[in-house]
Image (cartoon, rainbow, N blue to C red; front, side, top):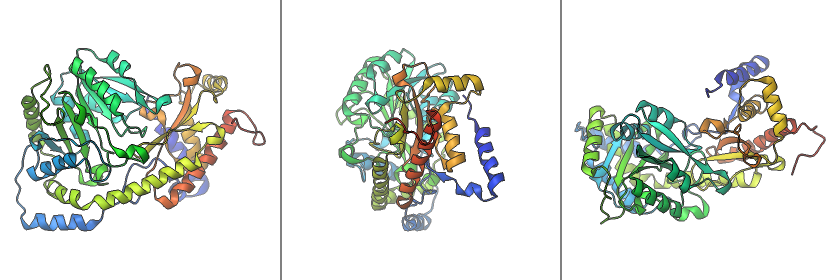
Length: 449
């Protein structure tokens, strides 16, 4: 399904023509994913000091896996469990770490080097839409395992098992998850690892939001790399989210098989062969910037306080969300995020007048999902920008039972603390306004409770 960008343009242009040339600046972003645009920029001094040291000894010495000092700093990061939110500690050999220019490049390396055309990968749904393109570039089939919205986005291991066949090469885990804000539990990880060991499926674990974990969940980030019984686990992360530095373009792949002493399980590709093949492809392009690799050691040493302050702001916004509960009076719900920066808001089937929605859709025959109509309504009438959940593969127009029907939106926690409460109150008003039309009732009547 193609994005209806023309609908959004018309919404913006129509209002702009009516209200003047500055109208577009009045739109408020509730699905911000850019840390800098939200006002979160790391202190410049660390970068300046790193540049000063770099220029004092500047000499280009490319390493196909990335600078050794940077890889050692990454290995220490996993050994310590993380600078802010404690995760399971994992011993990873710096020789099994490759530095790339982005997590997207990391995925591309793994997909293009360690698979063959026609192989398949298992992806979470809802999930980040970029994966489809990355898999397509490597001529891979994508298969989707659903995250259960009724159980805080938990993974059904039996369904994963059913999806696997002899050409399944990777199970992709996003933990913390985007857009659901969930973590894969230790119990689920161990069950998935058993399946992957039996079926000879490798794991890619995307942990880019690893430092943004809230409440009781912050006690420990479960990592498949810590529990693996010899299954190859490729852990991905980078400075884009970890240090709120997407402009610096540095990420990594870290291969492990479990804790020290754990031998690779039989039937998987040879460890040295995989690292050599990935290293050769990485050496072909050498995309990662030498200065940023050099500076990474200082980032790990100096940016802890900044990341902690960022986590405090995100936690405060999460508390605002829990307190305000946008749309709650007309049936909207959400799972308080365990981690990450995104949240899925849902209006469940018990509140939807499906006959009204379906008859309206059939009469108009416009093919626009109901959650996208809602997003455009909020954009036009309430000046709020957010995402319909179908962008992430979470569809409202399925043939599921009525209790599984839904309208869903994705919002972000990434906003200045002093502004977030007002943003949520505006969203609450917008959702109530939309539901009055959805339920075909007048403003004088009560909404369902």
